[in-house]
Length: 210
Ligand SMILES: [Zn+2]
Ligand SMILES: [Zn+2]
Image 1: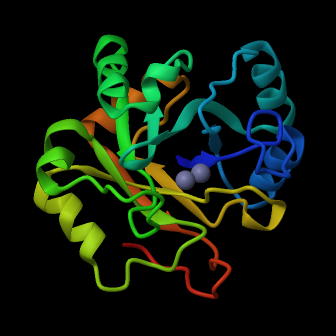
Image 2 (image 1 turned 120 degrees about the vertical axis):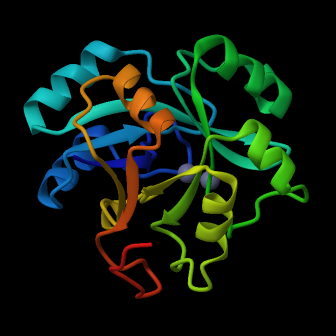
């Protein structure tokens, strides 16, 4: 089951031009089985709207979040709501611990802050690394992938789509089907996922599997 684990819509991310309908229609065209909405510092609350849209387009819709922390952008799955304390990494870790979520370091090659997590913090507090991102060239020297494997972290792929043309560049293959946010988190925790690039990034690289 192919799920794009990193997408932004204009409904909750100010830097996105994508409506939910446009995202799901293009995801279906591109052969995705599901998308996860990872808005900046926000979680979708209107689950009835998401269920209706998922049924209409035949694409599963999951919910996550992308937090802007002092260690850069962090993808969180399994959290029910945003709280400002999550913008501090220790507050985010507490929320993930109490709710049973997972943390994935987003686009490690794209530095969004002065501080990046070192290997000790990655190993102790992160569960996965986004090794493939639709906005970034492949991990050509293998550094990100080898770090994930060295530390025993799972590897995800996500388009980081903010526009129609970016939808479905990268995805995460779940080895077993998932039908809910809880099942998605369970399979991520178990590491039963593989990152895949489906379409070239804007810089022309792709498709390849890492
Ligand atoms: Zn980001
Ligand atoms: Zn993003």
